[in-house]
Length: 491
Ligand SMILES: CC1=[NH+][C@H]2[C@@H](O1)O[C@H](CO)[C@@H](O)[C@@H]2O
Image (cartoon, rainbow, N blue to C red; front, side, top):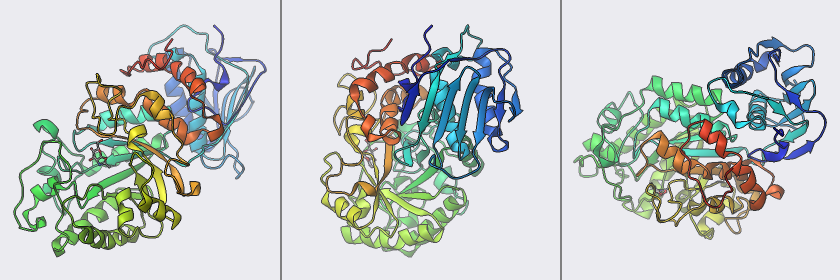
């Protein structure tokens, strides 16, 4: 079995030098780790032991043989997430400045092994990795995936499964859309009805659900163990029916509307004029900030069709300082640029044309961008008219569409330096199971992940589609029910 070319990896690494003797894992292979790399070593062992059937014991650094996970102990040109991977006859050495870099190197090593390595029962080898060197660093530091847990609720186990799938493609931010018209999904101690009542249903009228604080902290820890930072979103002032239904006083007329299980948007708004609204926002953001080790709180801001422009601006002027007051950075959908984005705020672009001059102007004035153009990155868009799941308001999105754009230039006129990275949102109006997530996210999520990680100069659909094809057998082994796009030459 010819060992896989080093450059076959998705996202494609920055620098690949193929050559030299391959390395073959065996009964005696050990995993040697720096003191700070024990967690990554345990993760790697957990990946390889079931399918290889080898003991793969963890050992301290010593002889340079077998698998080495070493932290360099000094700042260099690999940064927080980069790594170097050297394959020789003696073994595979992954070096990095930070554990996240080692973790990303492990994802690359994983992909250099046969797809059978993803099986959870002993598989025949050989477990050979081609000789050579990879030096790899990300193009963007923000490479996100969003899961809408409001329209349909997903359990901790279902989210953790998605986290594991995202880790394979070096995604480092998980944006959880925790509230919307159809469901409030995070327990807030000072406003208990938000989750207890506001989380009691979902699109289609199912049982919904919510995360207790302990469950949410479990998700944050699990994501962190895969070097992913959680970005919680409380969407405001629109997309708030679940909160408005839970507390009558939050409504301008004091009357709580019924819970909503449909899929319309833009009909709800917090009452901008009432003082209680800001007590609500302060309490929610305070409790959420306490649960969020990451730098961002996402305050939504999209589709405020039932909020006047003046009220929207007044609301955002009052709410953004609350986020920064808790030491967090504001993330919001790009409509925030119609108001006054505070210094340091990040706008998440979700348009389709790349011509919104208000967003361009804000970017020129210092607002940074996370790029999520809906006609390229929305994983809830149908692949084609016959796709059962998903929506089509932004058009049909095949794999080539997910890959065929440049985050640096999509928003025309915005400085490339304003772009922090990319994010692939998966809205869940029509998505309710892990299999649904897998079908819509694969193969398009890896395309967006490559746009976030790999150098612009490596962007090439003809090469990418071949590398993507080699991922198919991995997804089969991982039990991911992916869409077999005709654009990809699956093996
Ligand atoms: C930012 C944004 N707001 C809308 C829009 O994206 O489309 C999504 C469906 O594709 C929908 O669920 C969401 O509420």
